[in-house]
Image (cartoon, rainbow, N blue to C red; front, side, top):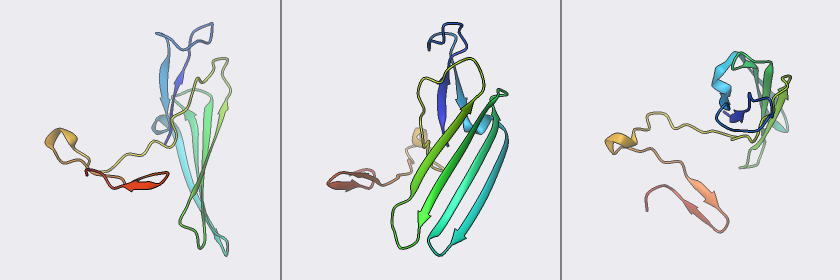
Length: 119
């Protein structure tokens, strides 16, 4: 769902001693879905990412009668290191195998036009 470079150096700068933290490395992942007349909200909690005291909460709000969804990420970093930037959301397409010439396509909306993959 998300990934970020994480500095382990004493200066806190991203460099050769940096590593990547990914939500898939969480010790515990919990998912909760809430629903009411205004729509649905999915909350995903990630605990102890990369065996560090770093937690994340992803909230996806899906309002009723709207085509858009609203994504939010909260990170709680209890280390002395800093997170340089965050890639969010990281979307993986199941069964995507570009090496064998069989890529999956996710429609990408850009202001003024929509692309559905290979044109």
